[in-house]
Length: 490
Image 1: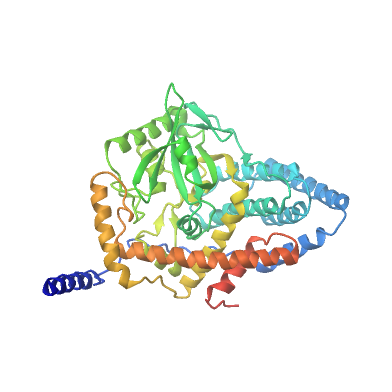
Image 2: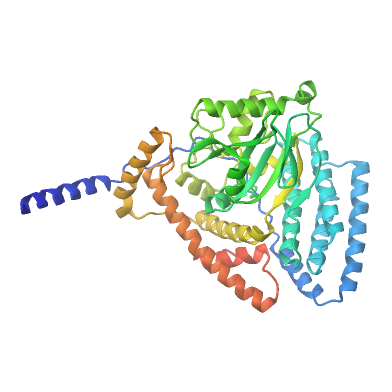
């Protein structure tokens, strides 16, 4: 009996030892961005805006309102001028306009009530920028920087205002009712059409990594294609999930999968392809909807949008639209920072000239229809992003994601179990396309993020008690960087 127990134990340890052999975990890098990550490098400006905000909060509300009205009037005049004259990405009037908008934001943030004029200026400016960009060369770096500064910069300012507001913030911000002939329905107060693209931000660590791990860090991490069924007008979301590949979700399932925000993008009605066939977006959506039902499409961890055998989220929309004559992401996304490349490569990404969700907003072929934000979760979004920005800084400084090698045998057994479940069409604990080592590294990364996030939340609470206001994003980033343990170069 003792010998049998000994044999069993010996066999167990031999198998356990064999399963602990790391093997070759290196991953190829197929394409790497040769661009340069955009760095705003305006810390002094953000600090001045915060100081200005702190001083304005002490002023008489009537005095603040007078200043707001003057700035709103000035910005409206500038917008009218830009509308009449037209402008290019390097127009010298854009930077002063943006600076004035930031100043207006610091004033409005100090008010106790929501200011509709501020949001109207924002919407008018965003709409004008999108319309003017139709005639710009999107592949030029000066164009991408101008679009990023204006669209991302103004959104960031609006969100800082929302976070300081004492009032309930209406979650929907309407931008443009782009005409469409395709079937339509309503999602959370927004009319959407078949063929629209929902660019969203999930509420987990990997979502923050995808939205920030870009040469132009953004607000969005996921893209879903809307198919609205003829006759019933029932909407379906066609989207790629890490856990199960490309799948179809009902509206209830889509909303249940936590979203911090989403933006509705629609192909312009005056595109030559849509003028020729107004139903093209619906046809593209229906083709993708039907293809998902005909074949299993695994998730593409490599982020290779040239190979449709597996697809990541952006690829779902770009693939079917390309098949119907419209190439989305006219300017491909680039990821050039060695730290970001190394970190994403840890989880299986091999292509760093790709299609990132946030960059779809800058495609001149698309109109922004509306934006929905969960105002109660907006602060969480900022916390997650700030922590990711700090971890990306650590990656740039050489920090790598490690894992507990003692857990490798367990992870390999779980991966085998997951693979068996995948064969029978269900999901396992480790996603299809992710190996055991990557799964362990993902767990380590999430744990690192969680610990740093808790520290930042604690520091932010102390900040708010001392200062009397919610810390703006740059303060959250500073807290995360100081708490990360990575040296910060001054």
